[in-house]
Image 1 (cartoon, helix red, strand yellow):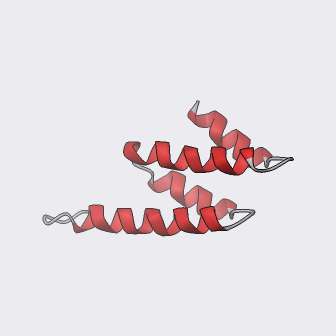
Image 2 (tube, rainbow, N blue to C red; image 1 turned 120 degrees about the vertical axis):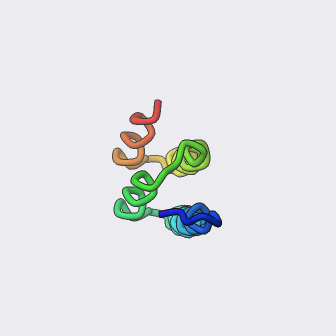
Length: 75
């Protein structure tokens, strides 16, 4: 939860970026990490998250159905 000085928003950004970095660096990202990102996602996070998934899908000859379904849910 956010407190009066905005530390909650900063914490959200730190955790979101930590998980995004892990997903970005992993050839086969953890479904748990993706679930956590989607659970905590704010409207302003959607573009960065979906861009990362699009990048993952476009680099793979046989893209993950899970990644495709996740993207489809945002379309």
